[in-house]
Image (cartoon, rainbow, N blue to C red; front, top):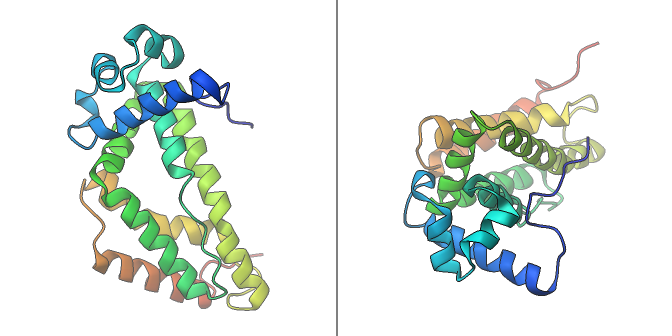
Length: 203
């Protein structure tokens, strides 16, 4: 299934691009100060200098703005390709930690998950964003298979899912930050399990 671009992200360039940049920047700044629940279209209008009717027309709701913001912010996350499986896992895990440890990014994630509980459009976009990102970083595991670092039958998706699970449990369920200890234990557990064939497809 092809994911639709978030409402308000079409027609790149010119006035539309400037409007989008101003509103997303305003949302990012507001989320550095307050929670998702405190964000309103009026606050975005005041901070961005974009009329509230324009914001409402392009994004409809606060959730629409923040979905677009998540798409923009997550697109900057790298997929490590150092030639070393352990180092790739470490760099990926640290990137996830750094992203989610920034208060405004954490507010985005927590707010969207709350919104997804009662908005099927937000639910689908958030799910698709996670699926797309997981598929992108399976490159780390596929490269490791080609080098012979892990068994040929290793399920790349399951490796990445296992890596992400404790990190997002900490952020989204416990509402905490990802510390160095969690980064270390997550990397080591995933690396050793993959190397030993725990994620090998059976049959």
